[in-house]
Image (tube, rainbow, N blue to C red; front, side, top):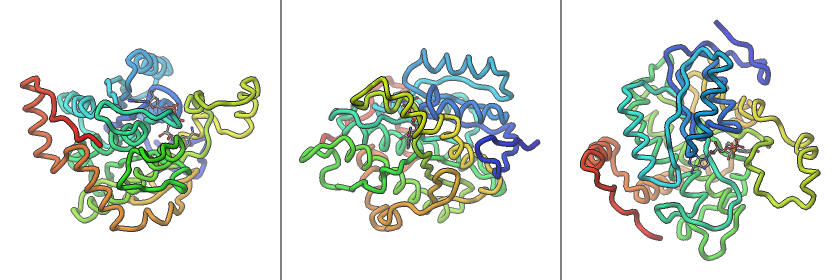
Length: 326
Ligand SMILES: NC(=O)c1ccc[n+]([C@@H]2O[C@H](COP(=O)([O-])OP(=O)(O)OC[C@H]3O[C@@H](n4cnc5c(N)ncnc54)[C@H](O)[C@@H]3O)[C@@H](O)[C@H]2O)c1
């Protein structure tokens, strides 16, 4: 059965029975709308997030709507690489397949701070957390995909990536921290990651694609912390300028499920259409360098070796090795 899609009438979305998705940050905002829609298409959806209360509420709401797919919550704290590894371990213990990870969780424009592993907050959560998570899930994605029905990695970027500056020597912006600089660097990094991942998957002949998504400006909690001179004007202004979350989520849903995008990867979607990303994202050497650097930062050499180490660490109740300090 095909489903019509209110916000993207040209998209052909087939039912997704038997497919499994994980939506990072799926308890609210666009993540919630994505989880809700994927479940309505019959997918088994895992909402991954750092608030159990919010996550369980989201699951309840989706169940109450009578979605066709199964929905559940699993804890994931993206500010901690240990939590990312534990999440992967718990997910794999479920012996489910995996077709669609939606790398959607984020923070934006927060004051200078560090993750549990001492990375700058935007860089650590928006980028490195999803980088490690995706890498640890790749074996599942490769096994679950088929060449006529690929697994699809969907990663949320933002138009701010166009003004992002990569500073490989000063990832944490310690010499001159700016909230916008930190957010935009994290969103540029996810595009580099998306394209480099596709290059590796294509070279290996794996049935997995990787796409970056820019949902345009959407009225979500992401803007709650912004300092607005007249707070009373915030809602009416937001209504005029921003889209609603269900509309914003439509591009991620399209990237995750649309039949016309089968086998399409290594590209950037804005507002439902494929478009060009920043020039630097097409530079293979920059992408390869950032990938190598990220592997070192999350202590990831090769996925299968990493997994067996992880199994060992978790079963012996030992914490993973300390991360490098920068
Ligand atoms: N809203 C916009 O205008 C806009 C524009 C461009 C791109 N985006 C991107 O879209 C995505 C979704 O944004 P949104 O607007 O729905 O934001 P939101 O604030 O509504 O949702 C963010 C989600 O991330 C989760 N999250 C935050 N910290 C976490 C942590 N430490 N561990 C696990 N989960 C955590 C939150 O719980 C929440 O579910 C983001 O990647 C954002 O960068 C949003």
